[in-house]
Image (tube, rainbow, N blue to C red; front, top):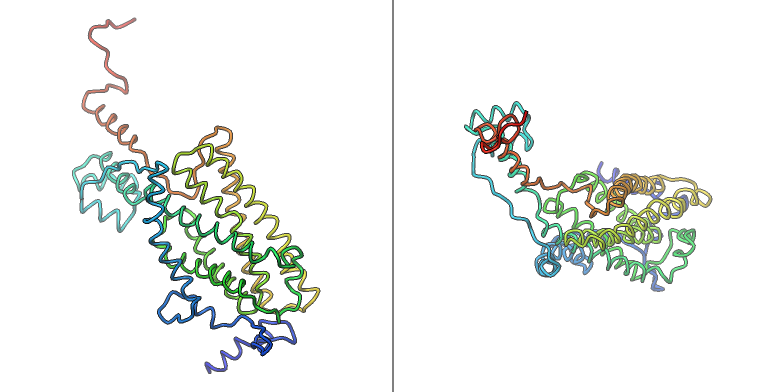
Length: 391
């Protein structure tokens, strides 16, 4: 039963156009080699990965954990990135239990109930929850360290991709990505480019729990899974040329975004805003113009003039459409951010970030609490007795 299912799953007619199949990927005596399924297993960060390419995802994961502390930490100090002091909450089992198990943002009725249970005023309970939420938010230094790690990878990956593709004919004429398909020889540079990119995205998926949480957390998970599936599938069926172009387009703008965030955390307003505008322009050009109208057009429309449609064709382009939908979603956020900060020249803020609640709100709460104790009357400061009341 299982063997029959496996045979059906890997049938040539599902993944390849008519007349082609897995037999086309047998290495030849003339030195020509092709992508192999076993190479993908080697990218997993496990002890069973015996191939050198298995180091890619493990190296990415390890550097993700250690680079921020060894390099990004001192760099943050050099650029003047400092964390604001946070007021820690006093331990309270009742409030902590509600915070952990029920909600981090209690309703007004819940606040009143918790106030009775703890003996605190409602405003004291509000303040406790606000400070407790702030304790869980990532610090500015941690955000800077994560941005530094991603900046280093994306910058290196972009120039590595350029080096791999700059002398290839399909870099200038995208239709040539299908020339000779699927019997296209795998080049060593393509092999390492794929393994490094795949290892990086696998490391992101493994480390997502320790990364800075953002409002688009679910979209990021979808993006990582779709990207890993796209890279893996394009490797299996030798869509290598299309895959390298897609990876290069994605890396073209990411390092700009990370560098803008680094200068944002350092407080370099003008530099941050300038880089972000450049990033927004590159993002829109590469992901909303080049990717859909050049690359996806060549993977979706052009192949139908050469081969009859098949399942692998639909599967590959389906993953591309998922990524394109995410690009449109993020482009809307980026444009909204540009519109928000350009008129006022305010420093750009990441719309996806969970902003820290200001401690000034505590001061307002304290001021309002004093009003109930006679320091403030009817919302106004009492008149000084040395001044006579004016008619």
